[in-house]
Image (cartoon, rainbow, N blue to C red; front, side, top):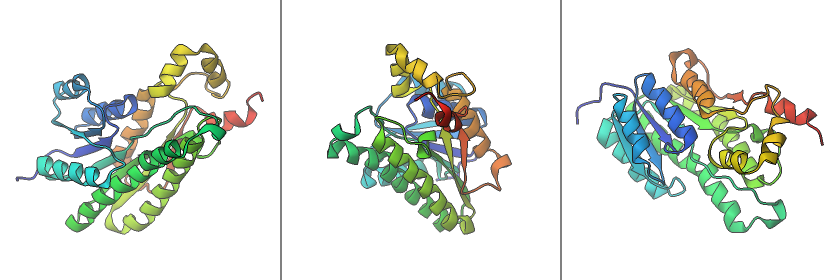
Length: 256
């Protein structure tokens, strides 16, 4: 097929609140998009198309190497290129450490960490083989640095994501591929949004951790993603941008 003229971005977990906000940001920056997720949301896909973007929706579980390979093949078949890859798919659940099952623990690692490995390796192999430079962005979390109760496997998986970003950055830099992570704080999206809505006590607890005093929105995170997509970040690799409203420092001084 003829080479696609516009730059193309891929976001895993692209249908969820954070992925979708990041996709909107990339579309505003002129990219066409591939959204990979296990769930569908035709309204969100159509909304991006209404902004003038060409959008490919891919249903796949990032925990499956075979599914990831098939999805990446479809991206190249549709666009003939990829320029930005954002690994964002993830799960989280609130369970006391002593009550997590082995299955729950492994599922966190399979999606939140192994999924990033599968996608990054498959994309990077194609870029290296084709002599193409690209940008990889990982969605980490402030809890990659600070442990938090009830989400042990999530914290551990995000700490792994941060190390994976540094290792990949080191080895892929000679090929012109950058790898960076963002570390958001408490974002009003997904599970956290439901907790904030259903349990007022969670909002009070979360607010005690945020020095800036407001709950982060998905669009706040997307703004940081936009920076990493832009040329302004071309000389940055192997780093994490902690965009958490101060949660890391706030947790250290929060009431016990």
